[in-house]
Image (cartoon, rainbow over all chains, first blue to last red):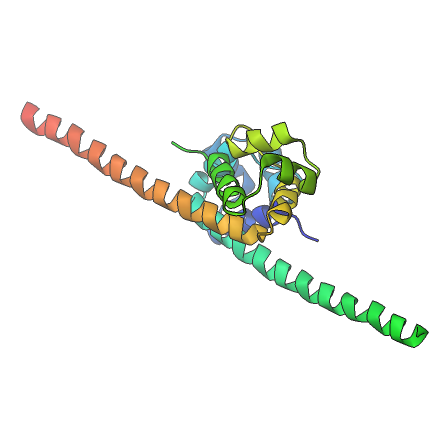
Length: 100
Length: 100
């Protein structure tokens, strides 16, 4: 399962790349350490609301748009997990039938 | 300015109320302390991705939907701030005109 902060990192990274910015550029603009931004992009650090706002501002994207993109990625993940759950719910019932 | 976690708290609280659940109910379902959930709802604590997922699950709402609602609230806030910025950008130019 992918947790939310991994999608947040993916969305921020994709935006940075599409803007042709380096980690160093974003670090200078947002006044956040390069290492920290790198960890956020890799989904290793949970960014605070203030940090997210600063990063979105540095990337010239509304934070609402970042969250919208994260929401979309999560929705795909949720649908995939619901599918997996319905598949695994078939298996036990087959087992119980063969045992009957 | 309202930061993201305040909107996260608002959305979670609205969902809990609409489901007719108490903080105690959500605390028991999500296995998170009641005080912590209360702080998250009031925008005082930044919930981790794992905690958010647990709360959304307890509230029987997809996390993607929670984020979508937070995104919508942020969008309204951003529009209001853009309006404020355009109003305050008028004032200085008027001052310079009257000084000319």
